[in-house]
Structures are given as structure tokens and as C-alpha cells.
Amino acid sequence: MPVYSVGQVTRYLKESLDADAVLSDLWVRGEVSNLFNSAAGHYYFTLKDAAGQIRCVMFRPATGGENLSNGGAVITHGRVSLYEVRGDLQLYVDMVQPEGVGERHLELERLKARLEAEGLFHPSRKRPLPEYPRRIAVVTSPFGSVWHDIQNVIGRRYPLAELALAPAPVQGEGAAAAIAEALEAVDRETDVDVVIVARGGGSLEELWPFNEEVVARAIYASRAPVVSAVGHETDYTVADLVADARAPTPSAAAEMVAPDRSELLVRVRTQANELSQRMGDAMESHVRELDQSVWRLNRSAPDVTTWRQRLDDLSTASGRSLQTYLAVRGERVKGLEFRLETLSPANVLSRGYAVVQRQDSGETVTSVAQITAGDEVQIKVSDGEFAARTLAGGRG
Image (cartoon, rainbow, N blue to C red; front, side):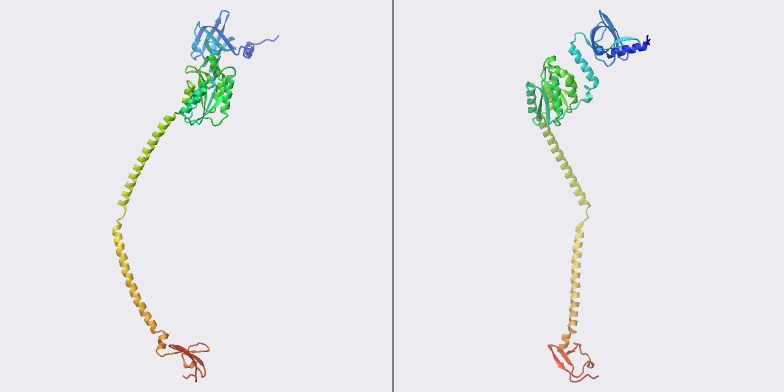
């Protein structure tokens, strides 16, 4: 017969309890007693009724600790397990609600607690809405007044924006899945700047699709910022908590995502006036700077009047010198011309001289030794030339 240690038995009991599907997701109602709040913020208490009792522990950051008080009737959610160190069977509580709250509400609070723990509600993930959206998607029913109201508001405030309807039922069986599918379809469009998820007021049951986890996760997954406008101003849903922004009504959501064109016109006019004023001021400043620069330039420039007169004097003097030089040179050229004319062969011939050249060689005869009897010569005189033949040779 096998013998087990205490640790083996408690381990087996704990593993058996943890594997039980019923005991791992349990709602228990009862009266609170022996309540103790530790310095770390954990709650220890006993939950009892006429038939029995069970030890409970609720660690931070579980939801609903403020509802615990000795003698108070509560409904708790948690799991049953074994604390091996002492062998205590305990209910590990993660949420407490006062008794009398409906199961649907309890389930909603549990979903909120879980999604909040995952960070779906955290303010750090909320994205700003675009200032000038080009395309606005609206997830709502095409048959109610909500779609009509949003169209009117956008058309009046900012007609530049394009509205795209992603139709979905907003209440009844299957509405949550249809809303999530519509959000997913919008997310596949790459040019959507902002999304409005909207429906009018209603009871908790009518608004319930917007408390479903599938809708919350579809809003969380949206690439474009989401504005939730579900119900009236006092109605809060899980969709409101997950969305990037919440509007109290669908019309308010339309006003939230679309700027007012009249305000834009005023802003544009104001900025145009400011720009005109700044440009005028800048022009005046530049003109003043230019005037100062011209003044400084004129003041720093040399006095060219004296130099201009000096240049005129030099030009006049050089002109006179050039004329004198040319006159002297001209007279000298005339003297040379006269001398050349005096020495000219034609001038010599005109005085009775002649030039004799041998006809056979064209050689000019300058000596009688160059001539023999019978040589033919050519004789040039001042007005022409003629041929001749010598009668005798030269003699020295």
C-alpha cells in the first residue's frame, strides 16, 4: 500500500482543484465575516451562509474591495484552490459586487476589469483626433435617425469631408459581431482618418452589443482614431472606455470630429490680416534698412567731381599734345617727300639724263667697259624709251 507525504497530497489536491472547470470560474454569494485588510491592500475574509462557509482572499488590484464589510451580503467571482502551506481551501476572489446586482451587470464588471488590466482603457493609448479629416467613417444603422443627424451636422460644419457609412445593426442578436465586422471593414480602407461608432439612447439591454468584448477589441485594433457615441450622456459602455474619445450623443460626435467652417473662415481671415500686417512691417523695415545702406554708401563713396574735372583737363591737354605731335610729324613727312621727289629717277631724267640698259640682259650700263661695238641697248628718257645700237666699243 503506497504512503504519501503531506506535500504530495496537498499538491495533488491543488492540481485537481485548479483543473476543475467549474471551480476555476465561479460566482459565489454569501455574507462577509472576519474581514481583514492587510497593509499591502489585500483583503482576507470568510464568506458564509446558513449551510457553510469558505475562506476568501482578494489580492490587489482586484475590483470591488470597497463593497466588503462585515455582515454585508455580496456576490463574488473567483476560483477555488488550495493554499498548500496551511492546507486551507480558499476562494481567490477577483471581483466583488453588492448582492442584488444582476448577473449581466456582474459579467460586465468582470469584463471591464479584465480589459482594464490588459491596458485597453489606459489614457496613454488614446490618440488625438485629426484636425481636418478628409474621410470620416460611421459605423451605425442606416435606418435610424443617427445616420441622418451625423450627415446634417457634418454637412453644415465641414462639407469638405467625405462621409462613408459602414452599416451594422446596433441592437439585438448578432449585433455585436456585425459591429465588429463593420469596424474591421473600415480598417481595411487606408484613407479613413477617423471613425464614429454611434447609436441612439436605449435600455441596458439595447445598448448591450457595445459592452461585448468583440466590439471592444475591434475598436482597440482600429488604425484610425475611434469616437464612441452610444446612448445618451449618462450611458457608459465598454466601447466608450476603449475608444480614443467619447461623445455624449451622435450629433456631438459629429461636431467633435469636424471643424466648424465659420470658425475656420474667421481664423483664415485673422491669419490673412496678421500675414498682411507682418509683410507690411517687414517691407517697411527693409525699406528703412535700404535707405540707411544708401546713405552709408553715399557717405563712404569718394568725391568724384574733382577727379572728373582733372580727367577733363588731362583729356584736353593730351588732345593738344597729340595735335602738336601730329603737326610736327606731318611737316617731317612733307620734308621727306620733297627729298624723295628730288632723288627720284624720273626727276633726274627730266633734267636731260637717260638710263641705258643692255637689251640682252637688262643690265643697266654704268660704265663704257660694259659696251662693245654693235651691242643693242634700250635707252630710257623722261618721256619714254627707244632702242639703239652702239657703233664702237668702250674706251677707258
